[in-house]
Length: 245
Image 1 (cartoon, rainbow, N blue to C red):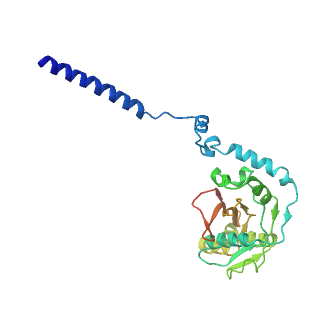
Image 2: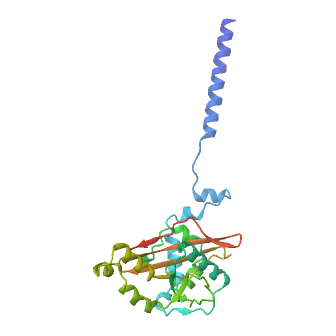
Image 3: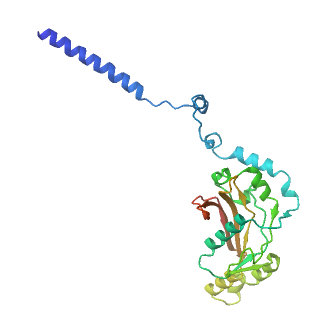
């Protein structure tokens, strides 16, 4: 009896060990390549194949082509979505509702140059290359009818630059102004400019750049990705890039 019991226990241990081994083997996670995933009809995210957006940037540069060397073309009218996006940008940036000098002409959206400071490739991935190319060589003239905000003052950018120079904080402090006075005067006479807008196919997302200049070492800018939510354009939480001086 004792021998049978020992044999039974031994057999049970062997069966348990084999079962545990098989269970452990089945539970192992084996990483699959994108090709293997495709064979299993599982599509990997596009970012896996182009993690740093180098392929996308090449496609955009190819789409833009020689447009940067051509004279930008004026687009006659703003669409309702463009007006809404510009309004959202102005409301977000000028949240304290101070009087803001805004350039009456947009500037082409630059997405191919390193100086554009668009560092987050996911911001580019959301927009079609053809839309980015179109926005890179066009501009609009803004009118009070399109942007009727009471705190918006549309100005000629070239004329405003002379005012900016004369109110540069460095010059103001050299003339005896306090730091606060010099900076406040510079901000009051600064210039806010916005780029052309690149939309995705469904006009649910929009990429736009902006810049504010108030002196030689006074200014900032960036690029935002906005999303249309329940009919309202809102800035997303993606940090697409920016600069400060």
